[in-house]
Image (cartoon, rainbow, N blue to C red; front, side):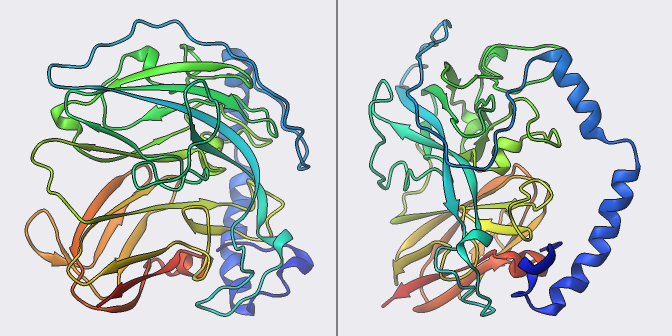
Amino acid sequence: MKSEKGEQADHLPSSFNSQQSSKSEHQQDERQRLSRRTLIKGATVLGGSLAAVSGLAFATQDPVSHAASSITHLQPAAGGILREYWIQADSFYHNMVPTGTDGMMGMHFQPYQTSFWAIGYRAFTPGWGKPLAGNNDIGSNTGIPGPILRGSVGDTIRVHFRNNDLHYKFAHSMHPHGVQYTPANDGGWFAYDPRPGTAIEVGQSYTYEWNVRPNSVGTWVYHDHSLPAGKQMIMEFGAELGLFGMLVLTDGSTPRIDKEFFTFLHDLYQDDVPVLPMDFDCFNGHSFVGNTPVYTAQVGDHVRWHIGALGKEFHAFHVHGHRWLDATGRSIDVTLLGPSTATYLDLVMDNPGKWLYHCHVTDHMMGGMTGVYVVTP
């Protein structure tokens, strides 16, 4: 939680304002120095065109054209399979606090204070025919986070990506962590060496191919890594607005479990999204108890809790009521996450009740990184 603006902040406790003052002074000092974003803006002009930012109003959902890329298709390694996904980046109006209430601290919000134009990845039927219904394999598929992409060692993951960001009309891409790929399948834009697949314009598509290697096993993030965007020329602005998801990569030794939970930690900044009255800290696109995901399990369930983060914050993810083993075999109940990191926690649910999970950075708790999970007997 950082700064609030004018009358929109009247509903917030006064203690929030004192926290904002020092950060506002720091922001003013930053603006007095040469802006890195100004330099990036110049590089963007040299390296490629950037679609202009449209006003925050409802977009007309026109159909988009198909412009498939031409790449050499990779073959799965021996024993592997081809896993094919059709992914689309969509812009949509999104409310982070649909109940209007912070169930932990008791604050109340109006929809206009917690809503903004988001962008998210969604999985579709082949040829982008229609959105897939959410399920245990790909997750909810509602956009934030994007669908879960899965693979096993030896597999090739082929992603047909289409940009349907009809609101902002930014260029977008998909950049994966944890897998092997060629430069043409990286998705990461940089000005001095523009590459295919790094700035897919609205209405265009591109096909990425990634290989799952033995050192790929684990939980990883994928995200937009295209041109700087927005009025302040923010790097990975598409990811801040919601373009991210998780890769879950396994091998024959990966332990079997009964359930999976997926939690993505991310932040929306008022400086970047000025329609918001303050900064919001989110789990899966939502803020505050009563709005963030409610996970359920039964006593005896073996649960793998996947967590990931993007942005510029560091987090301390804490689970009440249960513990898990770290890499040294020590029991812990909190783990640290930095930007673009992901991991998973293997827990045995042995303690019935309704329990909190949250980021233990107090600023992030106050900004909305709180939720509950329920374990039944």
